[in-house]
Image (cartoon, rainbow over all chains, first blue to last red; front, side, top):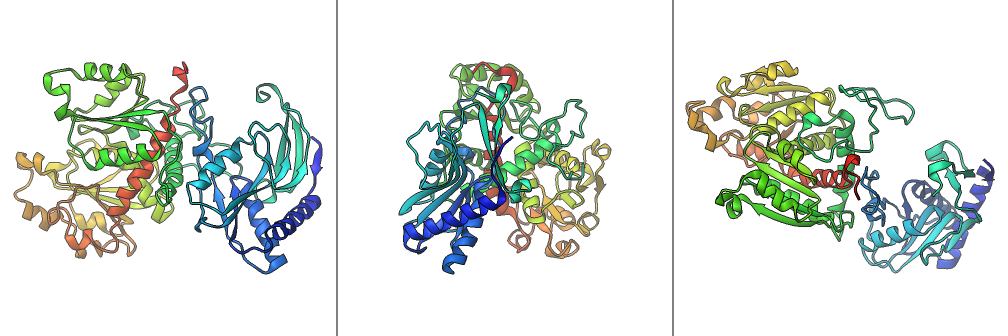
Length: 183
Length: 335
C-alpha cells in the first residue's frame, strides 16, 4: 500500500493549485468552487481558504452529487441503486467561472456527469477542473486544468485520496485490487 | 431504536428478519405498505428524499435518473393530489409516464383487475403506481406483476407514501422522530393514512396518541402500542405534531356522530386546543381539508401549519421511492 502523497505534500499541492487558479483567472471576480461529492467538497473548501489567504477575497463554495446523472445508472444489472446525497449550490452559476473540484480523475465519466448537472443550474462563463490525482485511462475527451499529481496506474490498481475531514488523515495511496473489484 | 454506532458499519435490523440488511437498498421490488419496511429502509427513503427535495429549487427541475423507464399510474379511485404528486415526481426523474383512470378505462366494460394489469404489463412498464378501493389489491398485483408496484392507497389498508411524507415533514422540522409526541385526530376507522402513519411512527420510536369519536375507533390499535383517547385536549397536550384526518363525508352516512357541527365542537382543531400543544407544534393534514369540520381555518392557515410543506415534500418522497425501486430487486435479474 504505497503512499504516494503525504499530508505535507498535499498541503503544498493545494497551495500551488490555489496560486495557479489566481494566476490563470487574473483574480477571483465571479469565480466559484464546486466540489464533487464526496471528497471534492472538503478539497474545494480548503482551496477557498487558501484563495482567501492569497487574495483576501471570499469565493463561494458549492457541493455537487452526480449520482442521478451517472451514465451507468439504468444500465447495470438490476439491483440496488447508488445512494443519493444532496447537491447544494447556494449561488447562481450564470456568467461565473466555475472551478469544479474532484479527488481522482480516471475514466472521466464522473466529470461528464458533473458537467451535465452543472449546466442544468445555469450557463457558466466557463468551467475549469481541479483534481488531486490524474491516474490516466480516460474513456472520454476530458482533461483537467489543474492537476495535483500525475500518477500512471494500471486498471488493477486503485487510487485512494484520503482526507482528514472524511478519513482521518491526509494521504494518497495506491492499492492492488483483488478479485471482483478488478474489472 | 438502535443508538448511533461510532463506526460506519450498518446496524442490524430490529425486525424479525435474520439477514442483516445493508442500509443502501430496499429489499423488495414493490412498496406495498409501511408494514413491510424495516427501520433502515424507512431511513433510506427519508434520507434520499432530502437530496430529491433540492431538485425542486433548481432552474431546470429535472434529472436524468429514470430516463427510458416507463411508469404507469393506475388509479381505480379518484385522486388528484396523489396522482399529480406522483406524476410530477416521475417527470422530474425523466421517466415516461402514463395515466390510466378507472372511469375512462376498460374496467367500466367489465374487465377484471388481473386482466387489466396483464394487458398493461404486456407493454413492458417498469413501475406501476396503483390506487384501488379494495384493501390488499396492491399485494395481489405485486404477486402477478413483473413490474414493481407502488401502493398509492388501497382501500382502508395502507397509503405508505403519505406516511413517509408526513414523517419527512416532521423530521425536517424536528430533526428526529423518536421520542416525539404525535397526536392523530379524526376518523380513525376508515383511514389508510392513519394505519400507515401508526406503523411508521411507532417503528421510528414516536409516542403516538390517537383521538376520535368512539364510533370511529377500530379495535386492534390498542395492541400496536399507541394511546387511544376520545379527549382531544388529552391527545394534544404537549404534542410536538398534530395530524388531523379528514372526515370522509362520503363515508359518513352510517351515523357515526350526530352532526358535523357537533363533531367540530367536540373534535375540531381550534386555536384554543392548539395552545395545549408545544409552542413549536406542527399542524398537519393529508388533505383535502374540510374547513370548519375537523380543522378551523385559523389553524389551517396558522403559523404552525405545515400543510403545504407536506404537499411539497410529497413530491420529494415519491421521487425517492421511484428512484430506489427503479433498480428492481435482485431476484428478477434478467436485465
